[in-house]
Length: 259
Image (cartoon, rainbow, N blue to C red; front, side, top):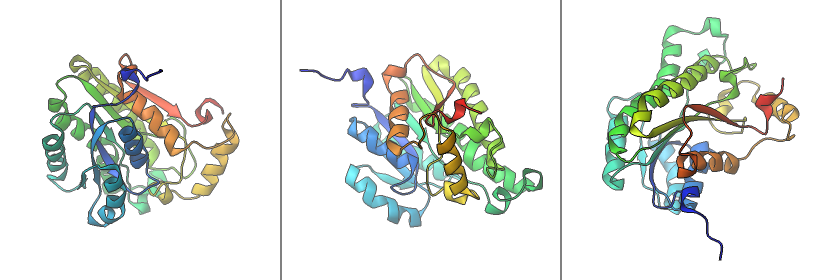
């Protein structure tokens, strides 16, 4: 009888997933796959309104759900403390939140406001560093941090605007966190999916055009799925990826590899 090696699954491992929004969100896709592999999870969503949409999903997966708005002082700290209280320790953390004011996101980068740029950086980038600082003390046996990026961090993608520089900063943050946390046997990665129709992506202007362009240019001739993003992310949280850290890894049907 064939069995799956333990290092290829998350069986018995404990994790925090930040940023569930609905059944189409990358965080939910990850949570569903991680639970199927035997992980114990705690998840967060933005606020009480999001809780009403997400709670039925997490209830089905038997995942405790918390609210956490990283812009409200103390909420991230409380979420991590409650997750650790429930799980005992952490083996992996998935950060899947990104936001920018629409007025700044839809305008030219040179027209972006300082407050809008700063808020986008705080929510989408610096919150990952804050999360790592809070969670690292609870990763005594090592672990993994994963965040979500996009091709617009490396290339100027029409209509992606302000989020391009923000995601570029996030990918740089991944490398520095990997350098600093490696001594604790903690690995850090950015997963860079191709565009998929999530609630966060709906704020990007001409998003349908971006989807069509990605599908046309991708060597596989299609978009990727939530399941494919989740499988890569769970792999990076497993012991199968124990020798890897500090990378941005694409799951975009090969779109990043072509001009």
